[in-house]
Length: 147
Length: 147
Length: 147
Length: 147
Image 1 (tube, each protein chain N blue to C red):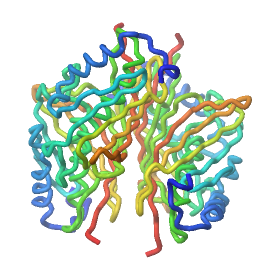
Image 2 (cartoon, chains in turn blue, cyan, green, purple; image 1 turned 30 degrees about the horizontal axis):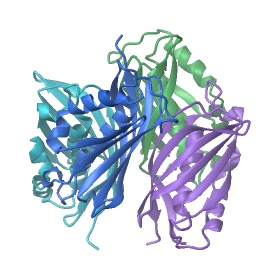
Image 3 (cartoon, each protein chain N blue to C red; image 1 turned 90 degrees about the vertical axis):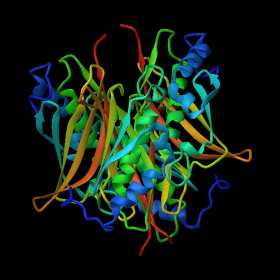
């Protein structure tokens, strides 16, 4: 990855981790950020019954919560130090029920841009150490600079 | 609405409310279902600081949680009594920061179908009694029948 | 519509019509622009066998061609005189086969913005004077200004 | 690819090529199908001025035409001999202007299913033998069987 994307703020890891810590909802659902590389971020979520929909699977909105942040922070790693990141839109495809011991959202920048960045994330369910792809997302992120 | 869509199960309201009660995540975030009509459903969510992202706005994933369920249950009102509803995919556009006293997701069926239903939802933020559109969603739902 | 959106360039109709005339593909498929209002544009397309997919319906990509331009020009009506419009992304839902005598794409701005505009379009098939909704699109458009 | 996906109809290549030949729009725009493998299809399109939008780039709807068919036929390769394929919805992200000598849409199945298949396609612009990614699509396809 380090050769593919150019980082403009060498301090991007601390910046991402601080912003993630400021997302109160991540504490509510017990999500943690487990990897921060240029253009790539990983967020993990343990299974909890109180995050589920009517059939006992993680609700698509909760999957979206960590997948959107994975896309957003992947984009954020490449932004200048004074920038904020804003999600304009995303689309999620639910490929299989979100059942498992825990879940890993992997977000990657597909196309960085000065104002608009496109990123993608995958959601993997981990059961007994085995990985299964359960959802994909593509999102459009905006770089917000102080005027 | 009652003239636009045909309901196949007269008991649709109880069926929707029971399923909503089975969505444990709705209790976690304090969401409640406030309206169930043929092809239309409303879900409300109070503002809570622990549902927010880094700037103090409701996280897009939490907005998605109630908007996806609003789409899903709008579709579910028109399904047969033995059916389950499954979200295949959705897309959300974030039009304005989700700031407000509370939030109302209004889901409506756009095109019902025997196996595939398309529904849309809007998210309104209510501040001092005034409504503001903050997000739109379009989702594709599947009718699952016992084999 | 005139009360809902503020037009910054009173010459928006001529600007849209000139740009549409510059879209060579519209001549290839015989599409014409039939209505230009603030935040709203209509494009019509006659049925032609050589625009079809394998079952004799208009190909989804051709439907997308007029629906994307309907979204784009709806956004363009509200842009300043020196701006260009760029589609960042769109999503289309195909609700019914695109069969009919001719087709009408109606594009409307959902949320205008200084840099990002969200617009929606509907595609109607007209058969014997009767209208049928066959597709919906939501698109994200960007305002491009000279530096 | 042959190990990743199971083909149910050994005659899938002829079936795809016949269906592609039945898409009249492909002749109009000079597109040809250049590769058919299990779960993967490639469609090529030469640059033509009459396929362009106002800035001289291939119109997003024409890009969508070959990308949607690339997704659809990638899905179709895995379907039973008596099935038809139907696009339910797709989303396209436009990453760069579609300028080049010719264009290659590569469609791949992401998740096959008995009734619903998710596929993705990339659009590459080729200039002087060099490839550039200009658009990505994710689409949802339906298997239609005789009743």
